Amino acid sequence: MIELPEVLTLARQINKELKGCRIASGNQGNTPHKFIWYSRSAKEYAEILSGRTVTGAKGKGNWLFISLDAGWVLAMGDMGGRVVLYDSEDDLPRKYHLLVRFDDGRCLAVSVQGWGFLNLFTKNEVSKHKYAGNIGLSPLSKAFTYDRFRKILDRVSDQEKLVVKKLIVSDPRFPGISNGYLQDILFHAGIHHTRRVVDIKGRERQKLYHAIRKVLKEATDKGGKDEERDLYNEPGGYSRILNAKARGKPCPVCGAAIDKIQFLGGASYFCPNCQT
Image (cartoon, rainbow, N blue to C red; front, side, top):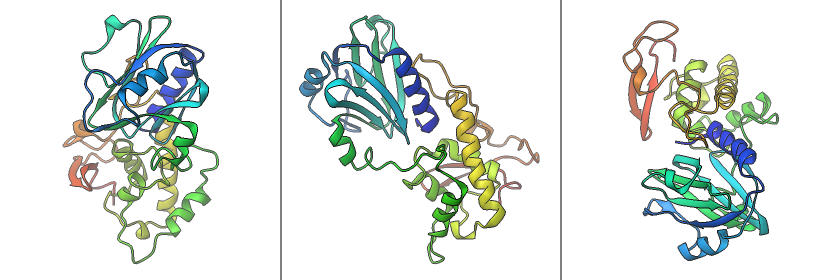
């Protein structure tokens, strides 16, 4: 899954490589399916993209926004897959779900794995979209202070059974964090995935806040996870501590075997000693 460090990396690279470039043509790709959500017909994509110029790109949450002239925006989000710039059409992968050809012969191809949104919006439509228009403050923003984080946790009622995993990966107040980075965040914080939010107090709250900022910043500085690819089809430089490969191996802190449970629709990896 592409998360905040990946979209920030892609946005930076697109601004470097494609800002000011003119689109020769574009289409919805050669293998559309029902788990890819487009916002217009294939004909409209082709007509609107042709002749447009890239004016910039930004990443927010787990959404990548590529701005075009005349007020159009390519908004891609909630997706697994790759957004890769190829030198020519001869280099394209066998399957792709969005293709943008530029006047200089290069091609931007988006290949979705699983599901995702590949929307072509006006700026006004972005703000009205249920997901793309409802992205909260970035956990890497200077405005995302510990006091703000603490208030989010304070608003969770004692009667709620909300657990920390669901709060972080399923809540718009923590945009851009999915199950991938959550593993290392909770490991650094020393908190188990199943802990109730109301039971996390004092020092543990501080550790969780700093773990969120630490993991996301380090991953962003390194260009994202090594399991994902950047605009140049190169892997990121961040290697997760906890993932499928870590199961059964010794914890890097205490040496206990890393364990796994299926929880809230996904795998959760943890150290049974370090994460309470």
